[in-house]
Image (cartoon, rainbow, N blue to C red):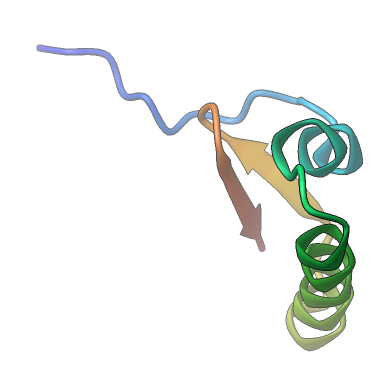
Length: 56
């Protein structure tokens, strides 16, 4: 059986956004979405796999 790719990585979400997003407007939008999702889910964001931000 293959290994699951969507495991918790412990990577810093802020660092991921700062590294991955190269457009300032998209970066601002990403941080706004991060805050909204955190408020709505009442959970801290966590990195799953190489590029998935999850809540809860």
